[in-house]
Amino acid sequence: MGRYSRLREIRRMDPERDYERIHKLISQYEFPWDYNQGIGVAFLRDYGVPRISRLLDHTQEFERAGQKRYDDTVLFAFEMTEDGFDSERGRAAARHLNRVHGRYDIANEDFRYVLATTVVGPKRWIDAYGWRPLCANETQALALVGHKMGLLMGIRDVPRSYADFEKLMDDYEREMFAYDPANRRVVTATFRVIASWYPGPLRPLVARFSLAVLDEPLLRALGYRPQPRWVQSLSVRALRARSAFVRLLPPRPNRRPRLPEPRTYPFGYTLDDLGPHWAHGRPLRPLPDETQG
Image (cartoon, rainbow, N blue to C red):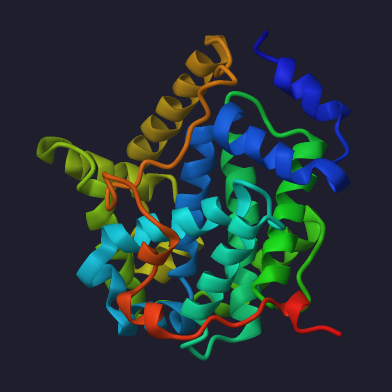
């Protein structure tokens, strides 16, 4: 298999039909590290909106169990997509996720925004720092995965195209980004989780690097100043050097998909392990398509 063999395969696919397969190729084979970085930046963007960060701050989930909260978010998405959205595994994960969200009064526009960041974040990161940019079929597949996930979560007026997701996200941020102390508290708790993955002496560098790749409007909303230009330049050069190196490597073998490795569950997990403990006693709600007819 050549370095661009999967790209040629993806270009022959129909994203309207094959979007789940294309998404798996993106996230588990072609760009597993970059996709996760894009999702990570998407999480941080959510904290730039006071209405969202105040809710997260109120729950204290990141303060009390930040690593679990991070792992559970990744694993919910994995469980919904791994066997397909319409599989029993995927639908069970969606029901459980909706049970967790059902406790809170979350505006539909906030749900739409958070969903948009998970579509736009990976696309923008991969195009900037991946070993190649996404092709049109990959971009549309990301949008259709977001669309399907939104439908299962009961979100209204979910976009179907990447352009619409991008416009939704950018328009929302122009209106809603603002500094609030809750923003800073939640993002600081998240940075503590990220820094804990690295040896102690590297943690200050990790924090600087994390801030250096964020745009100025988001930094202002989080209560941080932009990093010095030399730090920003060094971070970008390091990421692009990595992408040049990865471009020279052979493709990931089909037998070795990059799967989540949650630190919270070193011995494995079940769906019931995901989410806050209080959610397990609440009744499951049917998915939107199970209430029709």
